[in-house]
Length: 494
Image 1 (cartoon, rainbow, N blue to C red):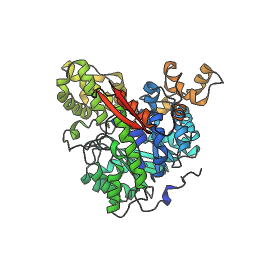
Image 2 (image 1 turned 60 degrees about the horizontal axis):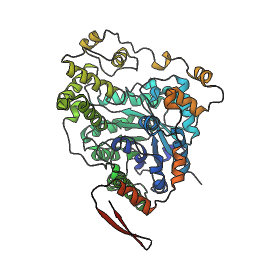
Image 3 (image 1 turned 90 degrees about the vertical axis):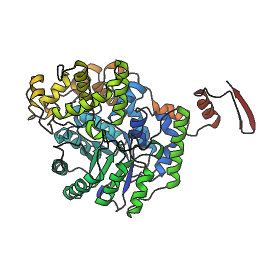
Image 4 (image 1 turned 45 degrees about the horizontal axis):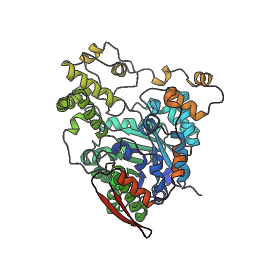
C-alpha cells in the first residue's frame, strides 16, 4: 500500500486543498466527542478516496474523552487509522498542555510526540491557548526530531488588543521557528469577511512562503464567506467536514468550500462520488444512533460579546439547569464579556474559556465581582500559563492579590517527569502506557479497551438486518414493521 506523499508542503499546486475534520472536530462539536472507532471503521476507505490532503484524527478533547468516557486506548486508534489511510494523518496538541488543562514538562511533550510519530501520524498541529509561542517550542523541536511536518496555529480572538499587527507579530514568530504550515484557528467563528480582507493578506505577506491554512467554526454563520476570502488571499488549505456533520458549532461543509474554490478557479481534485458515500454513511449513523446533524446558523450579534464556543454554551446551559438558575443565562453571558475584559482579553479556548465562564457564574451567583477567585484564574493572572495579550484590571489584580511575571517560560518551571514515572511503574511498562500515566491517575490510565480490535470484530461492511435492529431498538413510535430481507419477509411488533 503506497502512502500519499507527505513531503514538503511548499510544492503544492495552486488549488485550494481540503483537510478533513469529520473524525475529530466535527463530532467534537456536534456529538460531544463521542464518535467511536467502530463507528468510523466502515467508511474509512471511502474517506481515503475523497482526495483530502490530510485527515485530522486527534485533538485534545478526543484524546481526553477517549480515556475518560469512551474508555478506548487513544494510541491504538491513532495507529489503526494511520495504517488504514493512504492519506497522511494529522494530530493536534495544545503545546505544553498537550491534551489536558495541566502544563507538562518537556520530556512528556517529547514522549507524546514520539508516540504520535510512531503511530504513523505525519503532521503535528500545535497551538498555545494564549498565543505565547514559547509554549510550542518544545513541540516543534520534538516534531522535527521525529520527522513530522509542523503545523503551528494562531488562535483568533476579537478584542482591542487582537488587531492585525498582533497576529502578524505572532506569525513572524512562527516563521522564525521554521514551521511547515501556519494555520489561523478561529474556534468560535468570530472572523468576518471584512476582517479577513485585511488580516489574511497581511499574514500571507509575512509568511515567507510557508503555506497558510484556515480552520474556522460556523457558529456565527459567516465561516463559508471567510473561507472564500482565504481562497482569494492565497491560503493553500481549508479544514472542512462532511456535509451532515458540518455547520452549527462545527466547520464548513466540504461541498460548500469546494464550490467556492471552483468559482475562483482553485478547485482541488476530489472524488465527488466518494464524498457523497461518506455523507450518506454518517447521515445513517445520525439516524441509527439518534445523534445530531449540523445545521446552518443565523448571524448572532451576541456571539461577538461573550465569544463562547457553541459546545461550551450547551454545557453551560446544562450546568445552570443543575444549579437551578437557567433563567440567569443572559446575565452570565453578559458577565462573561466583562470578566474577559477584566482579565486582559484571554482567548476563549480551553482551558481559559472554562476559567472565565466559571468566574462569571461565581460573580453572578455571589452578587459581587471577584469575591471568590479560583486558583486557576490566579495562576493565569500571575503569568503561570504564559504571556497575557492585554493588561488585567487593577481591581481584579488587587482582589487576586498576585503579581504578574511572564518572564519565565512555563515549561522551564517544571521538573522532568519520566524518571519518576519509570521508577514508579517499572522497566516493563510500555512507552504508551507510561505516557498515559503522565496524563492521568491509575484509575483512568489503566484498563482501556482496544477500539481498533472492536472495529475489526464488528467488520467493515454494514449488515442490513443488524442495522435495522439497532435502529428499531431506539424507537418507540411504531406498533409493527414489515420488511423483506434476502427473499424472507419479517414482521416485527412492539
